[in-house]
Length: 232
Image 1: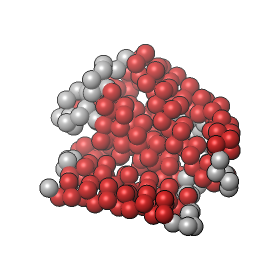
Image 2 (image 1 turned 180 degrees about the vertical axis):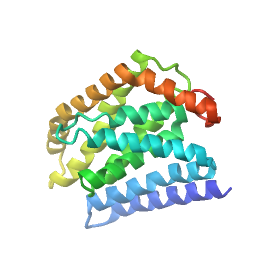
Image 3 (image 1 turned 60 degrees about the vertical axis):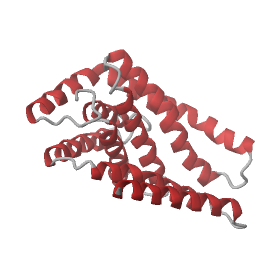
């Protein structure tokens, strides 16, 4: 009941923001976007908290998040060539959709202490969190192998992460919101999204299955099968 009330409160707050956005004479689109993003994250955090994960599960999720952060940091000098989304997807396969969202959101937040925090951070948190969440949902039904992992990783990173992350650029760069200006920003982001998606696909194809096997051994040893994971 408390979980439903909390989610309902988040939805009511989100609706209120949308109404304010449509009726207010002076609109700060960036501020509105940030509020919407923060509110959209609340149901995921609340649901995960109410699932009462064990200390061992939290330790493994923290470990995967740390690997994701390091995987982004070590390629600091190579823009968009980052295996972070691949690690998030692998974590979601082994730990489930809800854990996948947490790994994605927190890895984006923590790694931005290295790359720089800003108004773009919530966009990246939601984007990478959704990549993990959707991956967890897909691979709770589909057996992960090199082809399915790399294809899913490419599509989710290119489409889901790319669109949401580029939306932050629209909010920063576009002053006169019209279709040509918005489309031009998204079009300019396509090469960057493609490189990031291709990196994710290659990483998942090369070491995805081996990484999953290692994590599954840990799951088997300590019984860390979360309710929506592939190996439950």
